[in-house]
Image (cartoon, rainbow, N blue to C red):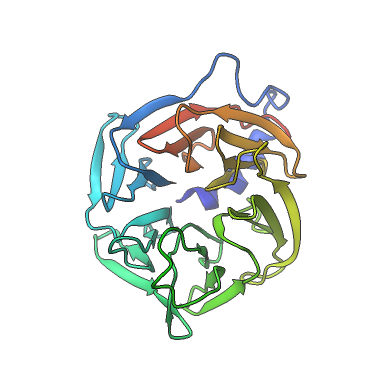
Length: 300
């Protein structure tokens, strides 16, 4: 079962512990480098097997880190310059395949048997810009961002948007007024959608009364020069705290938007996710994969 569908249960269990007021980042704990030697890491995702999957975008590879053996192996070659990853409840690995230097510009799913299904590659007969990051709701619908970085010569759509793919395969453009949507994540209860607008250097929150229908956009947090310098990938913990990658590390925000903490990282991070235990945070940062164990039982 993927992390998305474990968070609500974990939240209930953690709220019952007597450690609920302990500090979020334990004293003396720092990030640990667990894999290195890559060109540009992104898209960490917790697999149903307990491994952490992540991408090396320029190398066009999806990699698998085994926390038990500390070994990193290649899961998929020729990944279409995959960026963001996430598993569904059936064990399928969704990937946002990018654009630059031969990228596939599509949303795909690698099935448990290794076969690959293309789920979306165009909108209204125009090729997608460069799918970047995604999240899957409890119904199996997929939210994903479609910005464009670098060479924009072959863009067929001027709008850098957020899309929603329904479980039956219908693609809808649901947000079209952000400058460059990048990281995206749902709250544990699926009632709030967070989108990082990297160009505007802010995080925007949306209400979700119904799947695929974000409304009531509101400013959640700035991510300007004094706070991150722009946000890339994001995740949430069982208490609904938001973890957003920025220049100095991973910035942690309470559900009301107030900054709670900062996790400094040796390299500028690109994305982060929790392992299936809901406590170990994995961070992709340029050449490496890092992790840190947090006290996510700590109440916001």
